[in-house]
Image 1 (spheres, rainbow, N blue to C red):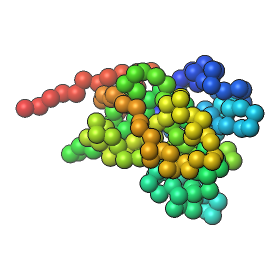
Image 2 (image 1 turned 45 degrees about the vertical axis):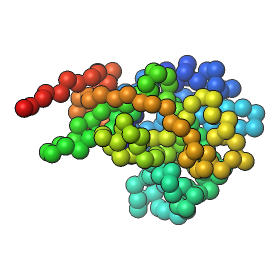
Image 3 (image 1 turned 180 degrees about the vertical axis):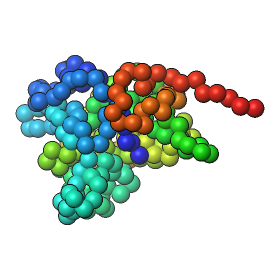
Length: 212
C-alpha cells in the first residue's frame, strides 16, 4: 500500500519531460495524502503534460458518499477489477514524487519509514486516472523492502515512459515484466502520521533506540 508520499519542485523536475504544465501548485509537500490535488504526468497525442489531479478514485459504479475513494490498485488484478480494467487500457499516468512513507507493524505500534530511490533520482509511480482523480498502482514488495511492508508502489524509469504510455502495449503485462529500481529507506518520526504536519523535518532519519 502507498498512503503518503513526498513531492517537491514537481514543475522543475518534469520540465524536460513534458510539453506543458496545467494548473500545478509547485509548493513542496512533505506529507502528500489522499484527497489532495497532486502533480501527475498525462500523455496526449501532441505531447505530455503535468497536471493536478486528486488522489483517490471513486469507481463509476459507486456513489461518492457510499465508499471511500480508492487510492491504490493492485497490479496483479488490474485486468480483472471492473474499477480499473478499462483505465489501465486507456487512462495511464505517472505520479511525480521524491519518496514515500510506509509503516512497519511492531508489537504495540507502527513505525513509519521513508523510502527513496537508491540513485536519488525523482520517483515516478505508475498510475491510472479517471476524469480528475488518480490511483497509484502497487505490487508485491521487492526483497529489500518486504521486511517493512509486503506492498510497494510500481516505479518506472524515464526511459520506459513511452512504453507505458503506448496504449498498444498491455499495461499490466508491461508493468509485471518491468524491473523496478532499487530503493533505500530509514525510520522517520511518527509526526508523519498526522496529515496536517508538513515540514521537511518529516523526512529526517530517526535513530531508533535498541534494547537488549
